[in-house]
Length: 410
Image (cartoon, rainbow, N blue to C red; front, side, top):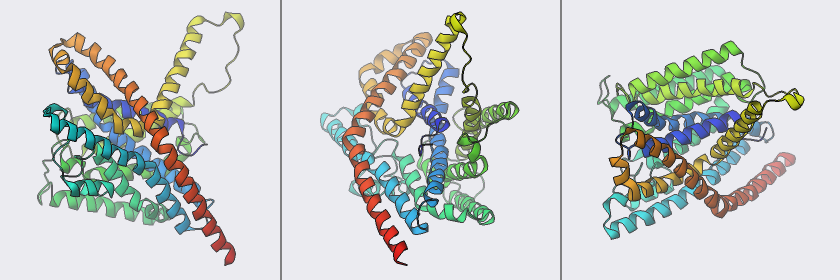
């Protein structure tokens, strides 16, 4: 199994990025059918699916590293190097690119192209240091969607500690309780103003910040320790369990919609339920990906055209979702450019369309934006990420030699 390339997780990443792009596009189509608009708005919880998958991948990676490294410091240093060079180079490029776009928009006076909120040099510095999730003006104003990267990088800081604590389940349970208690206290003290009833608005700082989003990583962490054999394909999910996982995913999704974008009962709780739905969905996907993977029995010349067409369609879908999953980080960073381009050129056309036309245009635009964003991602992958990966590998090799020499000298 190639590290980080579990098929079910790539499919989850693909669904997450499609949802994120869909929600950002949906606001340009005021006449979408109501049900379609709600489903599109649910796409914002693709971010929580990303968080769960990230936590699973992190602990899968740390476990693999622990098996071949010389000790905790070696594992921890390798983890930080790999995570930094995976996230930072593309993010720094996004800071520069969106800075140029915003500056150009400000100079041209075209207000709708001003894609970011007001921010200053301090906010940019906080983004460079990945501390922007702690600042209301820096969290989402320097890079659109950058709030999720800030929250994720803060979790990376404590992930190795949680991994080594997790070797004793009681200590892990205590750490989980403490982290959840800390989130509740922080939320109560700030967004809830010392009370038990919160009034957190969707897409506000109180919604974006770590106390609300952090529990999603904890859900993902426990998912890895409870279901690792199923997530990696080492064990199969029974048909009854598969049905149960689908029902759980649907139930948690309904709860998420009720608390969040549908009825807006408690936006501060919606991410946690979205994370629970994500785990159930991933387990359901694992059960389906294992079905029909055996060798197909030949049917000779009598094999139906319909079956061959179905197999071709299935292969095409798997390749597309795999490609989207692999490039999901880049697509997430760059799709805003494509979304704002459609807003710039087609806002009047989208806003005047009737319900049926809006639906067709929405689907077509969604595919177009995904395709363009994938192209941007591949371009920056070759120009920036490939070079960063080579630097990372060289640095990791140097670190490995240092630790190996130290271990032999003892």
